[in-house]
Image (cartoon, rainbow, N blue to C red):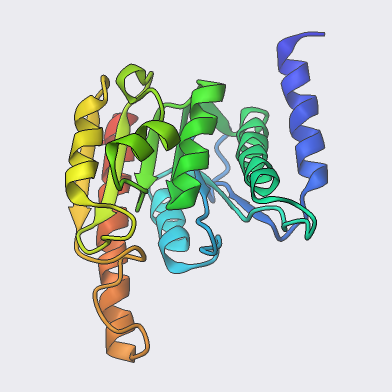
Amino acid sequence: MKKPLLTFIFALLALLSYASDQFDLVYLPDSSSAQKPCLLIAPGNGYHKDLPIITDLAKQANDAGFVTLRFNWTPRDPKATDTEYNQSRYSDVLSMIDILRATAKVDTANIFIAGKSLGSIFAYNAALERRIMRGIVLLTPIFLDDELTAQIYPDLDSLYCPLLIVAGDNDPDNAVLPAVYRAAAKVNTATNVVIVAGDHGLNVDDYNTESGQQRNMENIRHANKSIVLWLRRMVKQP
């Protein structure tokens, strides 16, 4: 059996295994038959696909001409161990990659993957396994010390595609800036690091107030704009 057919079959099986509200695959609103670059966005641990960082990133990428796919993790089996649940979430990312590879409107030479927080770990490692990504975005990633970095983001010194790291400057429980910079220094490919104001949710103000929510959203848009500018540069958009 030819490989493209196998890819299509695996993607079809993946589609059938997910509920219709578990993922959003958004095409461009045009009638062109040309294939488009794509951004796959993995959620965080408790930070689902319909929360502001992910929805705004998807919208900005769509506006820039990218197909986007954002999704939620398969619900946890109450009997699953932490290891089993993590394997399930990792499998979710692999399935979404397979769906994109079999999607006619996606330019498979220009698939990018982003992951939020814990999702950045699964996204990064899935990208290593599939090895078809045009670039990887670690969004509010986990960088606490060099030993942990080597465990959860392995092989930074032999990465096959460009890497973008986007972190808040006030996220000491997840991203210690010296550890971020040391990790970036290990990468052998083109690497960009963007540090913006904000905590792990890129919040800069009290999210219980209307003015605080507005400031937080402005900061999120600013961070996501840097990602989309990088994506456009990667595909050589003007």
